[in-house]
Length: 143
Image 1 (spheres, one colour):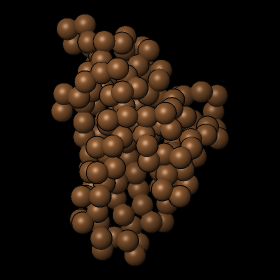
Image 2 (cartoon, rainbow, N blue to C red):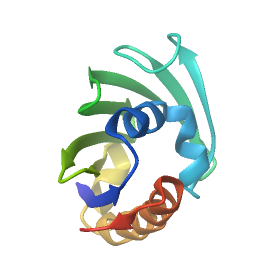
Image 3 (cartoon, rainbow, N blue to C red):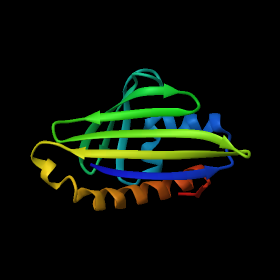
Image 4 (cartoon, rainbow, N blue to C red):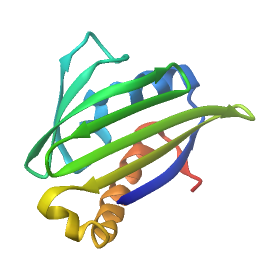
């Protein structure tokens, strides 16, 4: 299992930030590893909405399994080869909005043997994505 956690502070209002971050079609706007993201189920972000996300030449279908606006959204993607679980939490502190992105990726099947070593690669992917999120939110990284 590989995990990447980072927090971004922005001066944008929490409702605005949640609307942006909970719409997984916006992945392509801030994560340079995402080639495309298209909603395939639901009408906008919400519980049960799903998105086909193309990253590194592979298509993953992410489903929103928790949706608590404007505080938390959880999305997961499952294939025979991997399981991705992304938790995004938002909170307001001293007038700023803090977004914590906690992504976990577990390799399955024949790839499972490389799961431990994959953490280094996953961290590099996460670092690039969080730079894009900081830019998109006009924020700063705090963790």
